[in-house]
Amino acid sequence: MKTCKITYVRDYQNVRTLSRNMKNNIEALQKVASMLQPFVTSKDILIPIPSHTGRATYMLDVADILRQKTGCKIMNILRCEPHESICEMKKKKDFSWPNIFSGCNPKWIPDNAILLDNVLDTGSTYFAAQLALGKLMNILVISKTKCNEEKFKKNFKFLLEKLSINQ
Image (cartoon, rainbow, N blue to C red; front, side, top):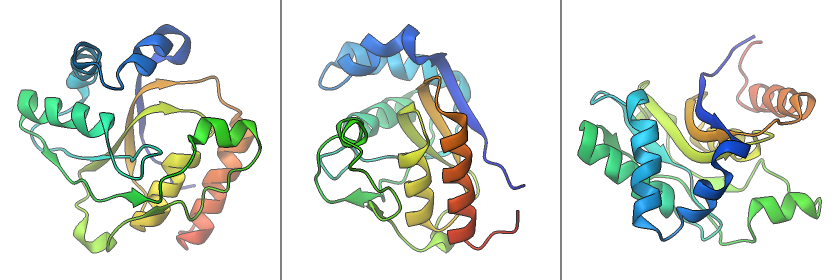
């Protein structure tokens, strides 16, 4: 089966407050960037995943701090319609991830591009971003929850089918 590399710094319980506080808090953004910096090189290209506002906000801020520290590049190419937070949508069971983002032609995305997000749970936003960009990609996140592995695998299988990638 094809795989994607998922890199996370801490379990969610250890950074939950930091993850929530980084929205509009420069000190928290800098701390997050410092935590992620060991995993980013000058050769990397970061693609921040948009927030519910429809565009990359605080993750773009983190990417910019990482760019300043490491010399990496940023491709701010994912968009979506403004919506309720995905966390809230999932609580209401009102979330369908496949068509949430729009991206660009996958030929424009180098192999060293890495998706950047704050939390990985069931992989819904991660997989939706890959579907919009039309290719499998690695991801760097601050934290990973103790996600539902069965749902994660189901989402990944669906992504592979949509991208027509042999398992």
